[in-house]
Amino acid sequence: MRLPTALVVEPAGSTGVGRLGDWLRDAGLLLDVRTGADRPELGSYAAVVVMGGPMGAYEDEAYPWLPGVRDLLRTAVGARVPTLGICLGGQLLAGALGGRTRAGDEGPEIGPGLVAKRDSAAGDPLFGPVPFTPDVLQWHLDVVTELPAGAALLASSTRYPHQAFRVGDAAWGTQFHIETTPQTVRRWAQADADLLARDHDWDVLAALERWDLERFHADLEDVWRPFAQRFAELARAQEYARR
Image (tube, rainbow, N blue to C red; front, side, top):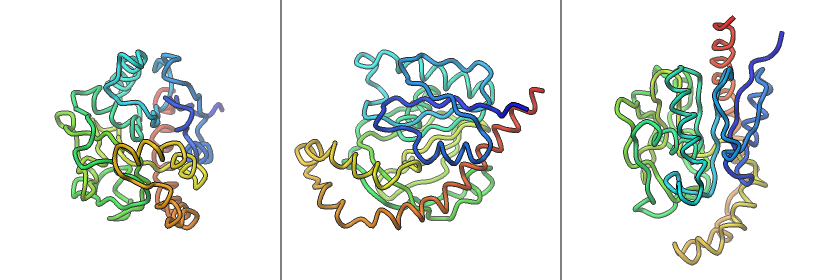
C-alpha cells in the first residue's frame, strides 16, 4: 500500500523543511518537495506544508509566485486537507483567507523562546497535547497583525500575539519555527548579521554565543516531534477516507 504524500513548499532554500520533514517521514508520510516558483497545485495530496523564507508575504511584485501559494492554501483549506504553514507559510495562510501581515512594530523576534497556549488550544487536535509554554525558535521581522475571520488563536508571545492559529478544522499556521537544527540557526545568524545590526541594532552573533543550541533543540524535539506525528495522523486519515 502506497504511503500518503504531503506536498511541501519551500519558498527559499535557506528555510527548508528540515527536521520537520524527518519527523513526518518517520510518521508515515512521503514528501513531495517543491518551490513556490513551481506553482504547485493541490491535486490528490493528503497534506500541505508551506515553510518559511526571507521574503515578505506581501511582496507579490518581487515574488510573483506568492499569489499561487496563497491560492494553493485557500484551496487546501476549502477541501479540508490537513495544512501547516510555518513562519512565512503561516503568514501566507492568514493572507489567503483575509488576514493581514506587516513588519512588526516591536522589531524582530529572534532566537530561542517560549510561547503561551491560549484557552482555545485545549481541544485542538494538534495543539491540545502541547505543553502550556512550549519551546520555539523565533526568526522573523514580519508578523500577522490580523487573523482571518473565524480563526482560532492558539498561542501568543509577550511581544506578538498571533503566534499560532487554526482556520477551519484542518489548517494551522505558526509564526515560529519548529524545524530547525543548531546548524540552521548558525547559518541564519551569519546571513542576517549585517541586516539586523544595521536596521535593528541587534548583535545576533553575540547572542548566538549565549544560546545553548544543542540542548535547546533537544527540548524542541521533545515537544514538536509528537506534534508532527499528530499532523501525519490527520494526513493518513485524509488519505484513507478517499479510498
